[in-house]
Length: 232
Image (cartoon, rainbow, N blue to C red):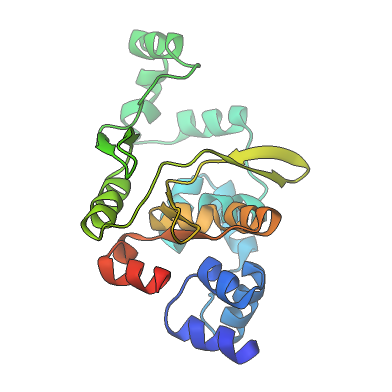
């Protein structure tokens, strides 16, 4: 299995794809990547000092190409009060980060609208499509829309599946895959690179606890060739 994992790493497959093929955990794949020198090591004590000096998680995420979840797992992060105080002390801020905005009537009006679920909020790029059973369904992202178009062009049956239960840190949760291919008993979940890294643990738990096949697709993998490879 060791050589199989290394060979798949060299081909550029993601941790979750390798874990499914080799029936191992994504963390084991990370171990081999680290041995191959493909995972950078960071001095989080220095990053902590930068964070304490006033840099935000977003600043550090962009600087070191690390997800916010990874940073939060390694740093002693600020609470909301401390973060707000740093925001007010920092010079040159604008927009919603500025002190003027914090005191404005516009912010007060925005706070009144916070909370609750609003259908299709944040889904400006979405549109309705028809699945293989003739049911209309709303796809929220351009990645999902592109994937549905490719599946339709290839005459591959797909549906918008229901949720899958899983447990993380002792808490029962629901995972909503984007596509289910009934002829191949396969779930597809197109995501951007940030979400792929962020959701790797969640997807691996879904796979292990439900004995299902779930593949996260990055933008470059949403192609006819790659989907043929998955179902071939």
